[in-house]
Length: 112
Length: 113
Image 1 (cartoon, rainbow over the protein chains, first blue to last red):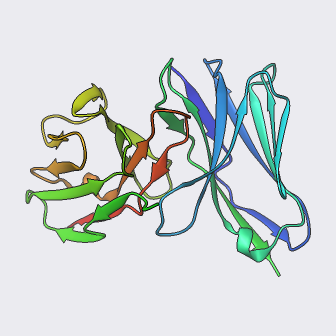
Image 2 (image 1 turned 60 degrees about the horizontal axis):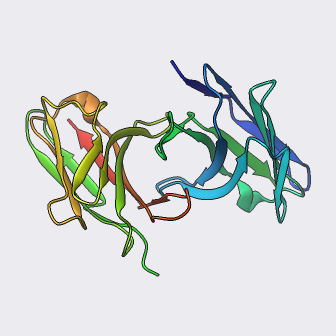
């Protein structure tokens, strides 16, 4: 069955550094992959979508890569700030649908 | 543009009681999803509606969970009878006809004691 894996351990970094989060998937070749941000007590908020034919996507301080050979997406936040502290979820559509299947998310903590 | 509205935000019930959650999606969004998110896990799809029809309810525990979207707009998710393991956040989300971004509500937090 399709599996999507994110590091369950929190990532702690210092303000100003680049945070890199990893999403691995198995038993599937998604047409695209999405990244969401979730703050405590809130619903997930969509950040970026990257398609299988795109190697990299950028939005302000965010950068996402998609390696279909490694079956992996990396999510980078450059010049990180304490306000970036949140849980980041990756998701891909299940089958040929628009139904996102989510990983468990990785908690990012940016220390001032 | 108003976002996805959900209520109640918090609910505490005893096991074997029933509970209902309400969702009003973004205006014009034909697709509505209910997800369950247990603490420390990612959201898991329970059911997807397209207008007032069910597209996918394969992961909905139908012996205790039910959902409806009678007029193709707002939706209700019901749990009866609740079990301790139903303690979770119930997230409603919607998607428009173009694009593949889904928009989540703030969630309804359920604690079953």
